[in-house]
Image (cartoon, rainbow, N blue to C red; front, side, top):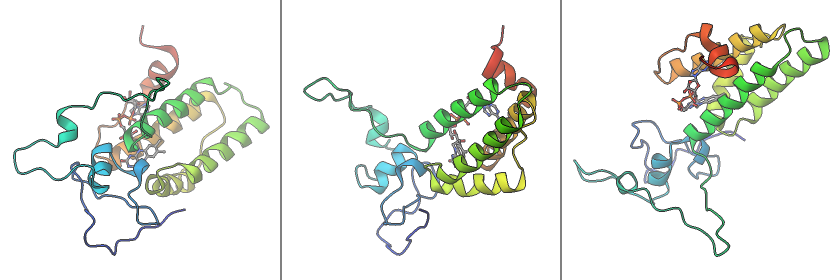
Length: 180
Ligand SMILES: Cc1cc2nc3c(=O)[nH]c(=O)nc-3n(C[C@H](O)[C@H](O)[C@H](O)COP(=O)(O)OP(=O)(O)OC[C@H]3O[C@@H](n4cnc5c(N)ncnc54)[C@H](O)[C@@H]3O)c2cc1C
């Protein structure tokens, strides 16, 4: 499932985001590993603008096209949309985890996180997340433990991406109780 062919010198190596463009095993750009703009650059849908110009895709978002049956043509997720949706799911699962889980629930949660790290669609992200889980086994003895562990897992990705760490004392407000 993983792998990268780097042998084609005509392929762009770095995207508008300044990050390395990730390619799948078959040499095609990985949609769920790159931002939408970088993916569009790698697929040749947009090109690098001359200095001072903004990429066409940034200037005007194309109107959402519809099929004859008015079915909205929503694009597959890029790395950011996939990440935001996945974190929403993961933190929400932690928020609903029992305060006193039984042994079956604990075992299932550990298995779920391990399998999740194997199947996460951004394979390039998944490699690091698998390593995080190997080195920091999911803490599943209570909701509080799991919620904090999830927050720390998310912070490890935040750190890797150069983002500010989230205060894990606030995880329940953000994902369970709300701020009021
Ligand atoms: C398992 C996994 C691995 C990933 N690996 C990569 C990677 O290697 N490279 C890459 O480019 N992207 C990766 N991503 C995506 C990345 O983490 C972000 O989701 C994406 O960059 C969008 O970021 P964002 O700033 O919108 O907010 P996100 O990081 O998606 O966070 C969404 C919201 O969660 C809250 N939040 C932030 N941090 C925490 C925390 N520690 N605990 C609780 N709540 C928090 C904030 O309210 C934030 O607005 C990964 C995602 C997942 C699920």
